[in-house]
Image (cartoon, rainbow, N blue to C red; front, side, top):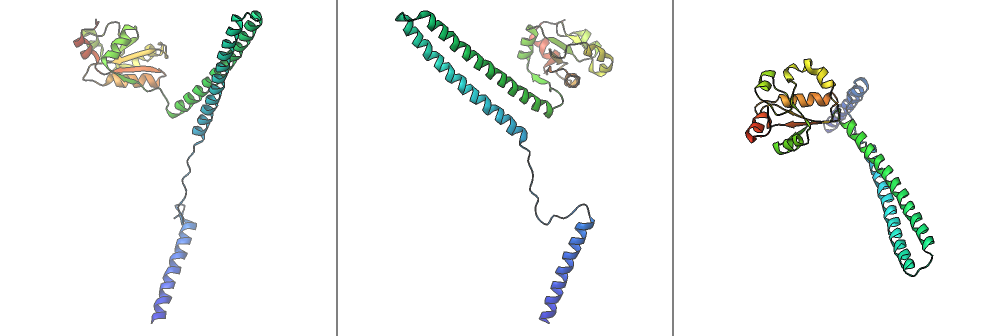
Length: 234
């Protein structure tokens, strides 16, 4: 009886193994027999780290040369006080300065390359420069610097009152204003706003960002907060 139970158990296990093998061979959604290791790509991070390490190395070299230059300047000053070969000291000092300048130029080139690499990674991470939310104090500072404000409300609301010098681009009719937006420089600062109870300024800002505008701000307080503050208006 005991042998029969063992044989039946062995038969069931063997049958389950055969069924599992047949399932894996015939089905694209295979059952893994062992856990698969997850692969993480750190190549971009490693590349940026190497660039940063190279920048640090060159910065240390520049600092070393700067210290050498300072010590040489002190030495030349002492030599001048002793009246020993003033003209030769001046030449050596200039050579040292030129050497430091060349090193600093090299560091700037490496830093620029590093910054470009970071920007390239950031640009791949997002298709457009996302608009930035701002408060009324920052909005007023941008207004004082004469940056362009864009009123996203309908024409009637705009005509009833708006921030001074603001142009009107009603978001609900944005298709009719596409040519107007396309005529604006895409690398300048723009502040989109509506009223405190609407969201069309957000929609307009993101629409502009997707068109290629890189510096769009959203003033959430909008016309209502601006009017309450008594800032310039039309």
